[in-house]
Length: 270
Image (cartoon, rainbow, N blue to C red):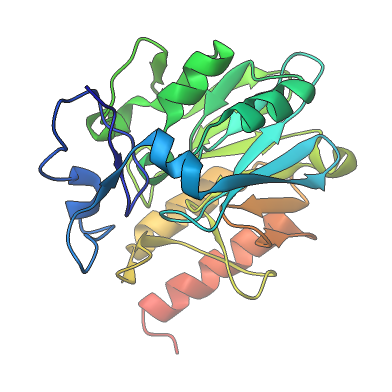
């Protein structure tokens, strides 16, 4: 029996004797099946061919990514705090070196993930650090490896610690979640956004899409709602899903300006 991992999206599946016949996450229109067809790997094979890198993104914020790039190529972020560390988003590779490095930074008290494309090997991480996984219940159907470590939450917000709050913004997925960190950016606030709020190539801007690889937009009303949801939050920086993608100044303003421009273009103001 093996927990197979989809090579295209990096999601680990529940134990099976044979490779799964399909990956529902990749077959959904927000993702895609590899052009050469569905392909699978295992955690052991992945560790033989890849390693994780660690990069200090900011005080109390450690980036963890995989080299060579695997699946979607996102990074996880370890938010370090006196009350216990939070792993934001997740990656597929977990090996002994990674476990040792994370423990040297204080371990993991809890895991929270923005949306199903980054569920990856979340159960492996949860078991290694005895940490619960907080997922929004609206995305329950996309969990490919159910486990008691997964704790579903409902509603608009979930406070994980003093000054650390999950916010359901929706959009890319119904349960699409961002993390508001009040003490981030030296007390000016930070948003950890996955790609629910995607930091753009011009890192003064963000965007919002239904499907990134298939370039499918969200409705104007949805983008307005996301902007309205985040309007009360104060944050200077936005840390996106991918290395190098962060808004370093006036992050809250960037969200509001980018949302307004997106709506203008959708509604034909250009």
